[in-house]
Length: 171
Image (cartoon, rainbow, N blue to C red; front, side, top):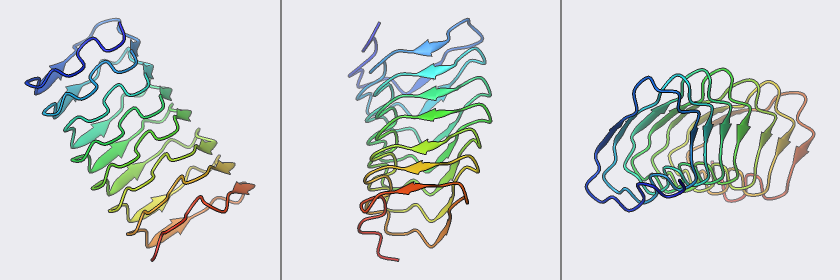
């Protein structure tokens, strides 16, 4: 169900275990403000829209079977510092990490071809960005106000960077 655990204000830890769960539905843990730890099962392939938006996660390391991360999936995770996608992730949704203000480290799968609109918008502490080798498109406001970016490596096959992709990145 969508929103199954949304607004559970006292939920700290989720251990899903080795189930056959393949999808975490839209808004499943939305606004679980103290949720800081999630153990994802190996069977998981999809994280739905807003599934972990407004949680207290500090680090997210995807299992190898995760292929899709929905729009706004981790938006407004104010404590999130590290995200590692796993080698098979091929789709990051728009705004997936927007306003994760302390996000510093991002390791993306080489299968990702598009950084969609607002994906890393307002990730103020994001410093080193190594974009996936297969990347073709960087969308509108994808890295808006990422003030700490100091090193950026853009792959040779990128053919679309919009006028707002890196707007207000002062460094």
